[in-house]
Length: 378
Picture 1: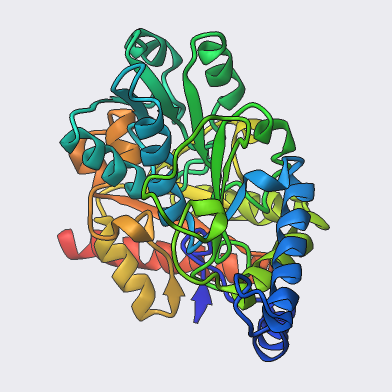
Picture 2: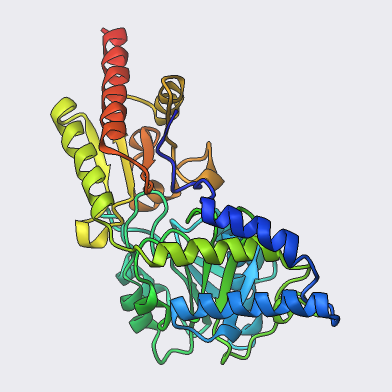
């Protein structure tokens, strides 16, 4: 089986798995317990927090470990909005945000908040003009992801931050797809909160982190919780956290992307040779595009059917975010792509072990499926 769905999840790396097992065996105490066994676990938890903060160049006090990006986004948007509702009850999110942020926005609407959803431009970037037009005196929080998970465009977070400067509006960014792929330190200092996930970077599943600037006057969404500085309940997953930090350290030691540019170029150039004019590629120019992710549509072939046919031939691709599987792509809808073209959408994403030979097989598989489909219609 050839795997091309790394944007959905990655296998756990051997180093992370080893650390997970070691910590499970040797640091099994509850970090909140006051005895020596708990203290040993607490020391490791503090070390993990400080290591992650050091990678991202943020204060360690702002790092809160979570069960993943979804929980982090829920906590971030709801906590920031509820903590600032004295100023106003208007929240802005990108129209192509991860489904967790749309869910959180719906929750806030039930509490009387107004939510504006900003579309993408046809090129796949947040529409800065419409964003600025949507800002009002009631706006308290804006949430724009750093990298779009379906087409890989790197969003203009600095420009978004500049729009909000001096307006007393908080900026959250879902950085799950960016983490471990690009140097995020130029962005972590210009947002008020961001979310990360372990399983996108060869770490264990069920682990992530939420950063909220500790200088903010923020109240935890649910009061009375004792873990993670009161931001969430439940004993922390220390083995998972240690495995997560191990994976993050390995990623940050090798952030260079020539491998991903090479396999991306090979895929697109070969697709153009075999199916010229028969596909639409979504995304931005190379400097504004994560090379790991390709979003495209093969003309006349429904994406869901193409995905199943690829799977039957031993190729794992997807039709978009795994958290929105089966639903119409939020990204393409936000870009104004018509419904027919939207149904053709597929996502291909590469990992560190993806080879050009594998990509070659994928291109030929797509070509064969397309050719057979066209022949069946004539």
